[in-house]
Length: 230
Image (tube, rainbow, N blue to C red):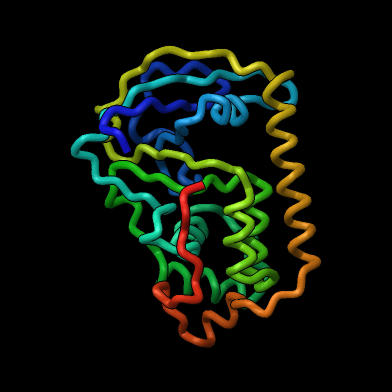
């Protein structure tokens, strides 16, 4: 990562001064300011079927920031999903899902609050379904990893610390037109849904979350797929 980067925040409003401590605690990586290095992706995230949005542009000085890249080969798909289940609200309907959540957090969790900046997959609604299916023992860890790689969902950059917030400089905005970018957003979502249906139809002899729990499989087991930036 270059020391000075340009990032974009897709929103329903213009955000000239990102504020530490605001936002939703139940986002993918907890409380923070969620951005991307892709202007087009920010525009997709900004629009709805009814309303235009805004892509807010910033420069961020990353020098001296303690950065966690969950998409690097240093981490596995289990690290990503452990962070996700700790912060997002999952539907825990079965005993296996309850045990899986606890196991993943205990054995694969990462303290995201120890970092200034985080890079990782964005769990759009469709891809949240994959994570939930894995938690409920419906798909294997290999299928989950493949879905993330094929998902074209991009990376998000999350500004976590007050120090990191002090390094943001607002540079302006562009209007995100719903007529253009909602179509792209829906196409991405439709593709994800089709991928989900295709994977559900597959038979897999890979590792389900119940296998991981029963086997006491650790995060560094070679059978657990390493993450690769998309």
